[in-house]
Length: 163
Image (cartoon, rainbow, N blue to C red; front, side, top):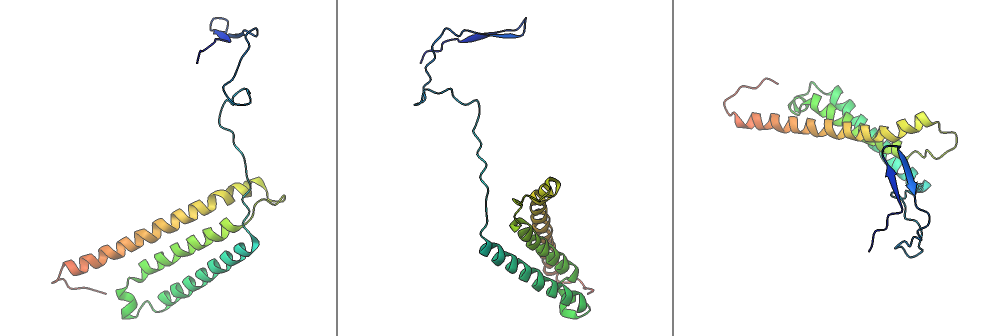
């Protein structure tokens, strides 16, 4: 492979000078000028309607069940068994699960409709990412806090506990 100069840049005059008398042969099969960068193809991703409905229903069912558990947790928070299980941490875990279910519902919404405004499309693009991140982080953090609390309870055998 021999490099043949086809032009040069004059830095003083800031002008690119080309030599058009040189016949160029490119190494690709069609002898075409190579691309200057990666070629990007935009392919719309369409989720089938049956899958959209199924995932939306499952996410709504998950939200409903989680709301029932959070409501029961709040209603019976004075009961000993609920007090022992850390009702505030349980509520955080529940709300983080709802956040993840909402992210799934928002992700399913099709924004390829012509009436979908651009600012709403940007929010639609970022909302599931933020909701999943927030839900996972708070839920996992609450589980770690609960585990740490149980570890401390069993580590100290002679401590009096106030529930």
